[in-house]
Amino acid sequence: MAATSALPRLLPSGDSAITVEFSRTIDDTANQRVLALDRTLAREPIAGVTETVPTYRSLLVHYDPMQIDFEALSEKLAALAQLPVPAATKTRRWRLPVVYGGEHGIDLEDVAKTLKTTPDDIVARHTAGDYRVAMIGFTPGWSYLSGLQESLHMSRRQNPRLLTPAGTISIGGIQTGVQCLAGPSGWHLLGQTAVRTYQLHRDPTFLLEPGDYVTFSSVDAKTFAEQDRAAERGEIVAELISS
Amino acid sequence: MSKLVISAIGPSSSVQDGGRFGAQRYGLTPSGAMDRLGLATANCLVGNALFAAGIEIGPFGAAFTAREGAVRVALAGASRNADIAGRAVAPDTSLTLAEGETLKLGFARSGLFSYLAIEGGIAGEPVFGSMAVNARAGLGSPYPRPLQAGDELQVTAASGTAERRIELPPAIKAPIRVVLGPQDDEFADDQKALFLDSEWKISATSDRMGYRLEGPAIKHLHGHNIVSDGTVGGSIQVPGNGAPIVLMPDRGTSGGYPKIATVISADHGRFAQISAGTGFHFKAVSMAEAQAEARKFAELLRTLPDRLRAIENFDLNIEALRDANVAGAAVSAIDARTWQVLSPAETLTQD
Image 1 (cartoon, each protein chain N blue to C red):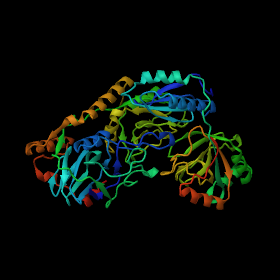
Image 2 (cartoon, helix red, strand yellow):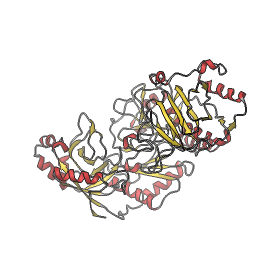
Image 3 (cartoon, chains in turn purple, blue):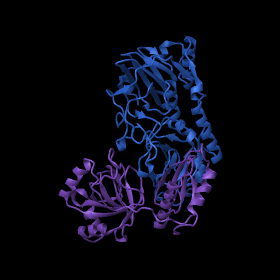
Image 4 (cartoon, rainbow over the protein chains, first blue to last red):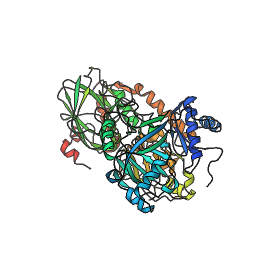
């Protein structure tokens, strides 16, 4: 599968949004270009653009058709997308504490069995990873991370669960993720973090930004319980390693 | 201050405004009114900003009581029987509830969602600039959930301004217009033709997140999994079973099914008002036409205040009632008996 074409495709998403598609597959180069275009638009706003939504492979650009039309905006976006990918001006790196297995990660044992290894080894592999927030979507704060090592790739569950806990850390396909709110999921649940990636009335309301880097550290259930109480009070409990 | 007490209300009713934009990149969906023209019309009638927070009333009945003072309100959107103590109320008019009076609403007769605007708006705390209820994210004010009987809204006391009616352009009876894409290339030409040529119906399992469509199964060229990308209001996703889902204001901000087409923004409200089981068609239009329609719709909203009319005498009121009957209910506007309203209990058991 071809990774990234030089020119993104500019696809209409109705009369008030354009999908700037860099790739049709999950690929890191494409995601870097998505995030770069997103940064460019934040730095040099185009009049009429109201909101951008980066995803793995495309940037959704919402705009007001009263201020700019599809043709004019497409031209501007095509030109910006061809600029060399600039380095991120800031690279934030977070460490998120996770309690793995047991009631907090009910699929850990099964994942270990499927991959013919031990739960401890799965935890070691997952905490060894250096992940990037490729996109946030679906529900508030649901952060999709790229960089899952290949030995942990596995297809999603046949039957998605209708309700999985807030703070769930899971793997699905070639991705891992941090789920903020309780909700449905078809991924394999490895653990749980006390970190709220979305919390109303906390500053900041949203903790992670697309493009941030994330690592995980293993904590015990007692620590999780303490952190969970602190997080409930509005503490961030994630560690900002660099910014 | 006065209070508007929710004496009775069916499911799918919540406080909504123009929506909560700016945080879709964090997975926060905009929410907001299903039918923006309906909300804007109601607000216009009571002199509010067009997208001030009002009550979006689902297809079932409702009753609202003024407490601690008079409350001036207006009802627009889907037509339904409405009365105050047996006195019929025309839609698309403002009216003032005296202290203790109750506005009773029947179930929607044409369309699904009606909007009750309250003069001065509803007291609450906006989050990200909006009071719109998004129950999934626990957002919305004054209640971060759909409204329930017994809820009380703090509102401004009625100003005593003369009541108004509004003359809206005639309802459009035409196919729902779409722009193809962004993933129409995931479908063969015959499947796109099947989508555009078929009669569709809205499934009864639809909600504020999405309307499921009933009709022929649309087949994909390369399977139904794409890498998730961003969604917009009106995105038409085709999941594995081939039954399209049109994404509505409470949609997920990203989705992993190919999107064959997108409903044009000018038709969002009209589409949202199609009730389950009613047949309709889609029609593909060019981007230029879609954007021209978006501008026309914006102009309609901008000039809504020009459409306000004084209610000078009884005749005009009768005319408003007659207008209300274009939905096709076989009633005579001047026969008061046809405006009998079901009691809330009877109303709420309708489904």
